[in-house]
Length: 133
Ligand SMILES: [Fe+2]
Image (cartoon, rainbow, N blue to C red; front, side, top):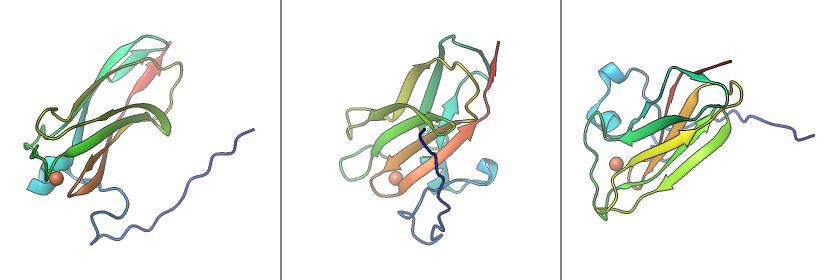
């Protein structure tokens, strides 16, 4: 049997590259936070085993630069701690938007997403999702 462990990490608040950055209150987010917070669009309730679409967009609240020196490198999507999908991006030619078709056979917890900016580190966001019969 595989054992799952969770680490407790003390991230330094001054170092944007240490740990994962989160936004406490999106309504009071700074411009830096608005540019980096990945926004998940997904149904609140889904039927067990049925496909549904999830969209994750970086820069939806405030446009993030997309140039060789400053761009979003990737977006990842998880259901709880379960990995679902990843998309890598290229500066200028691809926009930091990921669409995934997902099917969950049971509740895993929140839909979680991570994005990585080459200049501003890794950012996380999540939304609730319910899996019904
Ligand atoms: Fe950035």
